[in-house]
Image (tube, rainbow over all chains, first blue to last red; front, side):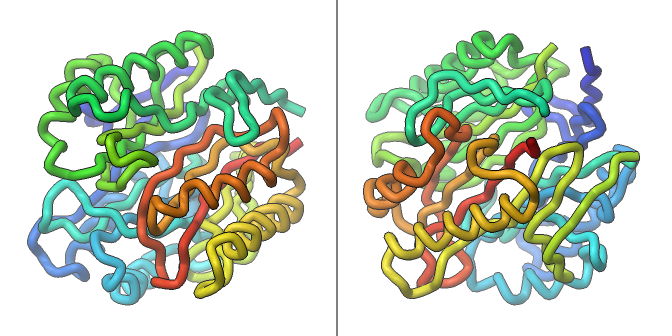
Length: 116
Length: 116
Length: 116
């Protein structure tokens, strides 16, 4: 039986789940009520931190699902994302419009990555 | 070649897909036009049943994506979810607002889990 | 360390990511501003092409997340989907309403599949 490692768990969710060399992160957001650019950068910084804690990094991301609270953020969000994503190691990504837990949150991302 | 096992398949989808010790469930909902709390409990009960049929249970969930038809259900939904989720074995979760197939459906969840 | 293969990568995303015999496709859409039926067929045709390029096909799909820009397309979309999906090899699927990158896009799908 392959072990499941969970980090930063609450009764609701684990921020990090690791199984069979795959890392699953819970949906990451930035700081509510800050500008979209700041939220996106903070969100991606948290992804970096969690991936590092899991023992991997963004060059080994497999998939990402991006939720934007309003698709008019698409262009601005992508500027931040494109500057962040690893050159020639970007994940399979989907991006759709969906409102997030708080009205002041504009973006969220679900990520999976492989361990080295 | 690793075998793929499918259960409860139709021409549209399989309720359970198993491959390489990972279980993928199709999106689960409760009963349309019943109160949110009832729908959430029924939805999670169906997750339990399908995971059991697949040979695992909620203590081995890896990821969950929750869709709420209206984010005003967030708090009430989480009460049901938190009471259901396995203590210290909760999955990586994302939760966003998205309408579901029928107007009377308020929540849906996509789940992956590991076999023991 | 298991290798990650990426195809059709940009600074934003890779259309195909392969790791540990699992294929992850980036969100696929059809041609904007064409009718829903045409978009759905084109989208699924692109899924077929990418899966083939990855070395697998729709009979080995594991999961699919479908986003419809408006749930009133549900019935028409499903007619196209059901005719396309592999009989007795359909994936675990979820389908929710979410607007997509362009206003003229009505459907998008995220897919994972196993290699043979």
